[in-house]
Amino acid sequence: MACFMTAPSQELLVIVVLLLLSQLELITAEPFLGRTGNPFSAASPSTRFCHVSSDQIEQLHRRFKQLSGDQPTIRKENFNNVPDLELNPIRSKIVRAFFDNRNLRKGPSGLADEINFEDFLTIMSYFRPIDTTMDEEQVELSRKEKLRFLFHMYDSDSDGRITLEEYRNVVEELLSGNPHIEKESARSIADGAMMEAASVCMGQMEPDQVYEGITFEDFLKIWQGIDIETKMHVRFLNMETMALCH
Image (cartoon, rainbow, N blue to C red):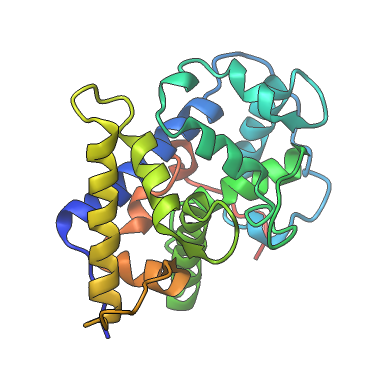
């Protein structure tokens, strides 16, 4: 059964993406001079770094070194050095996403205490634009990877479902900067969206039936009709690239 959310619910999802991208633009901004060299220039990079140019990796490495204070790893507190970071209402979830073992491909749950440069690249690889040389299967894989990253931001306990409480938490944080929307109103918005997901994804429910939460398969269906490929990418990764692998 097809599962589509109506426009208001989809708009909430898109707003989360835009806030995520605004944060990444701050994190990857490079307001300083100097070159440290490409740390992968003499090695064969992992396949997840394909279609990322050597210049892009070098730029990210310079930014990594600035964030880490010229240390080999970054910890959560290092993100406090990013200007205007505190203005993003979902800041805590975005920073957490950098240390989520699921996003780092290191395990099904848990958070890393620190990340190295390759981990940093792994996170940024979710935000590559779709490459014109990708075939249909590769495009679909890239889309699923982007959506799984977003899904993990909602699914904070790593149980494979976005529960009502988890969805409420994201919406409340998202709307926390709006003085005209009270917490109860934010909860009502989240409750309505979850009810919509339940009714559309499961159809007519029995009176005693409980919707346990949005699975990743449900999440994929919810995003049908939204062009995540053109929304979820960092601007500087749009430049013409020299592929590092074939």
